[in-house]
Image 1: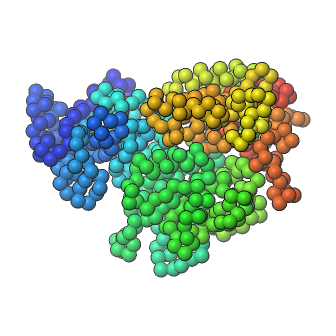
Image 2 (image 1 turned 180 degrees about the horizontal axis):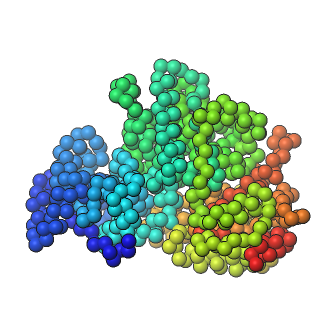
Image 3 (image 1 turned 90 degrees about the vertical axis):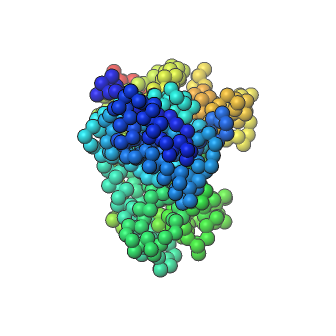
Amino acid sequence: MANKELKAPIIYETSYNIQTASQLNDKINQKYASDKKKRVLLTEFPTVYVINDPMKKDSSQYTVYVGETNDIQRRTLQHLDSDPAKRDDFFHLKNSKNVSMFVIGHEHFNKSMTLDIENRMMQYLSSVPAVYRLNNRRHNEQNRYYDSDEFDNLFDLIWKQLGKKNKILFPTRKIIESSAIFKASPFNKLTNEQLNAKAKIIDKINEELFKQKNKKMDEGKLILVEGNAGSGKTVLMSNIFYDLVHEDQISANEQKIKDNPQRLSVAMIVNQAEQLKVYKEISKKLFDRDDQVQVAKPVTFIKQVDPENKIDIALIDEAHLLLTQKNQAYAKYGDNMLKDIMKRAKVIMAVYDPGQVLSTSSVWEKKNFAKLEEKVGKNNIIYLSNQMRMDASQATIDWIRNIVDKGVINKIPQDDNYQIKIFNDPSEMQKAIQEKNGNQKNGISRMVATFDWDYSGGKTQPPNNQRYWEVSEGEWHMPWNYEINRRDKYESKHRAHKSVKYSEQSWAEKDYTIDEIGSTYTVQGFDLNYVGVELGPSVKYRNGHIIHDPLESSNSKATQKRDSTKSYADTLLKNEFNVLMTRGVHGLYIHAVDPELQKALEEASR
């Protein structure tokens, strides 16, 4: 249904305090004295409300609460009267100055619709830079209902009208939708596959915690979630993370609640700096200080948690990045991160994709991983098979999987939703990506490259009087990721012009990184609208197949041998290729340094 067929929502703004709450219905009736329908819709029908507290006068930072109710006056009085004694968030809202509330009504609101609007409002507001804290305690995503087909258009009307009243709190949707926290939000609507996986995982966690209540175990119980890149692992993980902290789903009956009334201790563990930022932002915005939550890299968690005093649940995102052997920084704590985490938690949920293992020190040998899966048990391994990242036809997905998994380059299919384009000049590809990024209707676009050009990571100065460590071919060159800020102190110089701290953004979200080129270490786990992939000399085309040449790679983490004898370079470079080729939501642009590969790609595009 088009927006013009829906009437505008009714949005009533009021101050939030005992005095106004006790007269709220009277005030609404006075405001809409000549419009009975609006009066009734706000006072007698379901509504959604947004309580917002500017942390300081004229501040750009807010504490926000979102709710829905069938009786706005009664619910507001409850929040101001009895709730402050039970919950810190309502205590602070009651005692803060300049707090206001938006009450939202519409003639098509029913209970299911308002629950859905509330949940979507949480998803968007949790991603707004100005929202410092966001309070709620539940998921409310609904399935189909009477007027569910109107939901997207109705939410758009509501958000736009709220934006006219407060553009800082309700900025343009496309700004929010391109953020990493939005894409990883626990309020994203889950698919049926994800919902089924979540139900199984919650049941297994519940069962295991109850089983271990009076039983001490050396290792916690492991639940494995396996799926390819783009299968929705992070959204599922984020959703479960939020539920474990907020929703008491781990006490499935009254007896368990009586036996285990204390809050769960939950850790989110990820061995990837960019993804760690996202989870820290989610934790800061959505969890209370007294929640027993930690977000940490594996070494930090292992160092801080005593195996004799296990936490309840450890969640591991990107578990394929965990180390499976000692290295210099980790040697004093253990020799296998997953096993060391299992000694420190009662239940462990780990999401894993063998196609995204990137370094020799993270490899599980096949026989050892098979033993791990056997130990976990088939009932505790959950598979996600749907492709959720790419808005592409099955033919396009098959083309990408064939080129990655089999090294076979077939004719590029035509796809109205997804563009695969081959460039014979990397500078032209860069220009095309910059143009796509300039119109961020569908998100951020960035350049990425295989790790085939030297890079010191800040340890030494660039060679040959270069300003940056670079990716280059002929006259074309681009700085590697992190180089602009590292060499030019860009973030310090431009901090005053930013509405959100650079430190809170992932690499791709930072505006200036459109002039840099990313690697697997900065884009793994993230979506890009269009991705421009520069395939370096390690990716070759010989005898009708793509091969990966470790002698041409500068990625020592992938090419170094294990125990001085075992090389996994071919698999790991193929995984690097996989990560880069599966970042794009709407498009994949490619240029190859290897002449034979470039020729084969160009022929496939004709």
